[in-house]
Image (cartoon, rainbow, N blue to C red; front, side, top):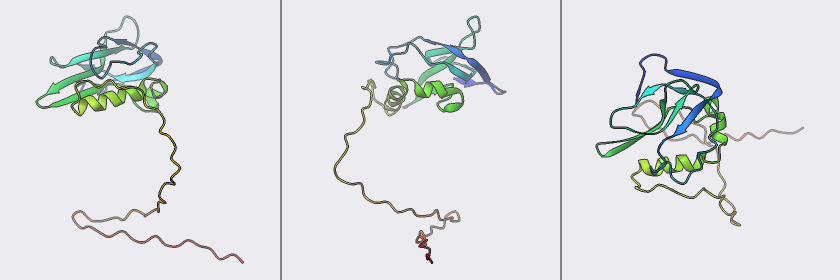
Length: 162
């Protein structure tokens, strides 16, 4: 897609209308798209001629549609556009949607070259009886570009109690 050169934000505090137009693509398959959570905004865009638009979005029923999810193969690579927000600003409801993790897992697999990206939803890993190795915090060490520095040892922060 091509985003506008000027401010392309569309705020939709009542929730944007989303239409899933292509469920056959690997990033879309196996996901329950209805009901889709209300998006509180998105970035207006124009699809490229060789892009495949999988879902569209619009601020209200009579408005023109913009691409929400679009994919494209370019050379030996692949691209995906999600024109809303995956974080709490516009995507607070989207983050709570049951298909959120599966959608992004399938996007990642498809971008990595998988032809069929449909995967079952993730399950919580079984708890192990083996304790995790202890981690020690190492403070960040500033360095100049091109000059590697060895990390400093953490200072002991013990207090004497009177």
